[in-house]
Image 1 (cartoon, rainbow, N blue to C red):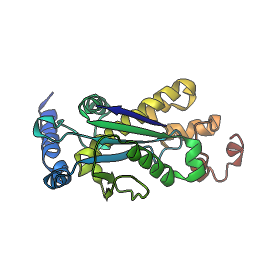
Image 2: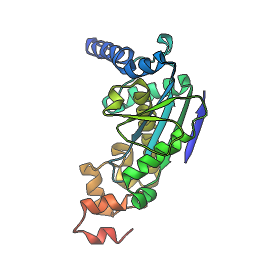
Image 3: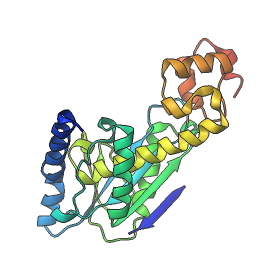
Image 4: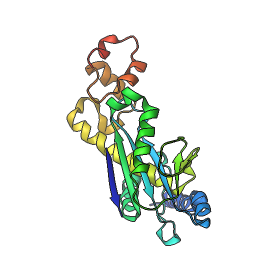
Length: 233
């Protein structure tokens, strides 16, 4: 599924100042380099490769990078608090030239494996871009069969403004999905751990067995000797 849209204390102050510095300088190195060559770029990242349940969500975003348009505090979503991500998400989708999300469900993940599911989501997002874009920066993953050239960057969500923005969109989108799933399957606590293998989640699996949202291939890795759980799929 692809969704397309055009378009405090001293400690806190110290942290915000550092984030602002990173956003304005370090995260714009790749973007400024391509801009100097007259090329525009997008960023792609995912959320949810590791959980035992739920989808993997990929986001692709094209952000304006003029100084006046830079959003302060944008950084790797994993290093931000949930409240910070939510605030930045709203700012990013309002400021973005374009952004896409692709949601690959757990059934597909089990069929083609998590890496291929992630690549599929990334390819779908990139191929759905409508605005002019010369290069797509990706967090680590190498892709083929895309209509736009791609450049994988190790730890790209800490080195590229566009990738960092995409990581926030992907993470917030997935977290919201898992909160919705929590209402359907409250016994697992999805709203708290978002499907990751926390002690709470493992205990719930042992108590209730898996539900239709669990990744069969992932559960097998955790419960190789507990075949009674796996037969409930």
